[in-house]
Image (tube, rainbow, N blue to C red):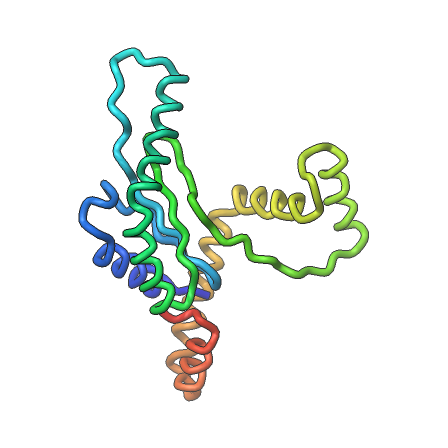
Length: 187
């Protein structure tokens, strides 16, 4: 579990470490156990007034691609430093206008055991053309739950942070702190 303070420190590190002018704004720094996703806002392309939707969409995609190629070396340098410091991969993305694009990101394998009724749900999603495989179907289910439970998950995360603060005040707080740094969740 990554605490609010750890998230704030990560955001602060990236805000201070990113080269000036790389992004118009640092939109989001999202960590988990395996990855830190850094998303920044880049300027929209200038178009003539009354440009069509097709022209605008194409210009935005081209701007995102241009940014990705032009800033690759700078982003790699920052990512290497962050990966060494925080022991997580760094993934990058941008927001340009209404478009959000991730350049690279970790697709971490997750092992799970499902009983037949749960497998049948996944197989129904495959048969219905919603997913190509059980893996895709499970990812689709996770995204669906995520979309509809943001408030609940936020409350749960806050409760877990409270538990961590209470544990830190206990008699074994040094042992707990030592074990939490061993699993790569510090920083």
